[in-house]
Length: 348
Image (cartoon, rainbow, N blue to C red; front, top):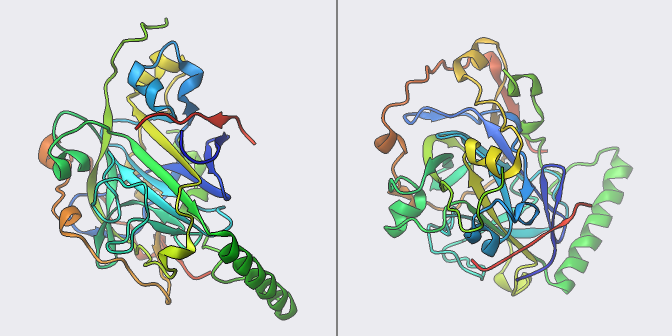
């Protein structure tokens, strides 16, 4: 067990320090070209592993954490909207850092940077490919070599997602709170309340209607899923504006996120999985929105050779036969500046 208490509130993960993470279903991008931000089509349901101790595999119980159902080749993005005080968040895909491409580490690093800054970073749709772009997170089974983990490390052992948050040290946090208090007072006097601490609205708040077009032995294994990459989209990963010494030396909270196939989800939880992903051509034909996000003050974390070499899952699974229809300019929306139960941690 490491760090503080992690909880689920509805389908959000709450990490110590006010870090809130939602796992968003979305449209899978074509693996060629560069695209705008796809919409959020509802949240993935989250469940605590320990609530299903009689039906999950033994290795899941040992790792603890949470689980969510995901279809083969389904895409997702992580929403950090609602996160409050500053935090440094590490995101691992099969224990490979999604920002630096380095092995998972219990420590923060700036060379290369291995974390995103909250609330400065409103969301993360994929692995860092640099130059203002990321490659979309796409679910794929372990064993093919198609995951980021498999391509970077040469083996597929962990799968899933790993998350770890670091708060500011007490003196830095007190300084930030005072700055925010003064900023809020000035904003009220001017009749506005915008700025660094208020990230733009998350695309996940948009159209919900499109989101819905017997116990086993403890030693039973389960189909394991990890994350590979799909298409490229325009999205910056903001460089750190704080020295390492500003952050706590140990994580305040961490959690292992298991990715479950829909049949396994039904077997483990007894619940029906969500409907299969929305047809992206139908979404575009319906005139529903895509997004562009512009931040005039944004920088971007440099690409890494490791993550730059990761190839899309289509090289293992075959061509993507789902039709692609590019959104019209009128469909692209510009985004500008602008208490559950504790989750058990385990050995991982």
